[in-house]
Length: 262
View 1 (cartoon, rainbow, N blue to C red):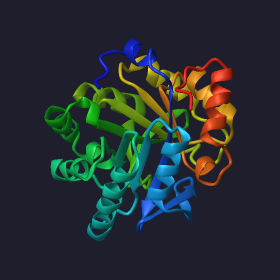
View 2 (view 1 turned 90 degrees about the vertical axis):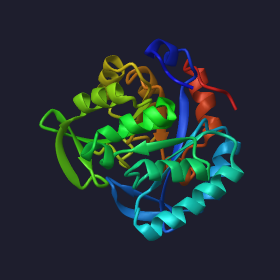
View 3 (view 1 turned 180 degrees about the vertical axis):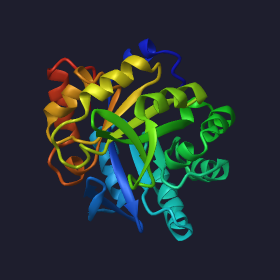
View 4 (view 1 turned 135 degrees about the vertical axis):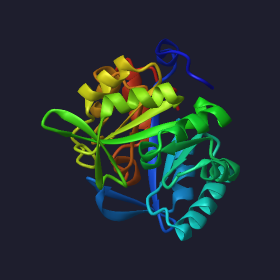
């Protein structure tokens, strides 16, 4: 499915997307990108989310060494056998060979982040070969003195690139979606970066996925209404049972948000 306009995307139901960070074959979760703790088996969790009514899943290989890649590819293969909803895979995607490996393992989409910042042409290559619907451009950004700066290498290295300029360039190069994570909000459960989300949504013609900050159901509602996001992604509130997906969708439906009901 390709998105030719924001109007088309806005006609679709808003998506709820659990995110699973995978390290050494296990799901982990931290706060502000550090202090990781285990959250369980990624395949079993993914199946549980699929059964509970999640619209999509995102799996990120957060330690993409050569050994980790082998482990992670096996996880992707197992996930593809167990779930029946689309899932995106990212982490250590540096070239077309990585994309091919993950798609062959069963992923529906591939997320690029640091490698695309280092070599923006990677987005062109992916969208040209596989279609823009396969390419998700993930952007980790931090608000500093009123400006949003992009980071790479798992949030460890500032790039000097402006969030909004980079998101626009990624769209122009063929990215099908932007996955925006606010590093200021990640894991602290105080709500999404709705002002930045709304600006991204207004300036781009492709869907924007909100990430970083989910703590309660109202935060998802605000991401869709105030932030104008097309999808909202979260991790710990789902992994540790603080919010159930069926309950969240019932709440959002009651708040007038167009979601696919469970």
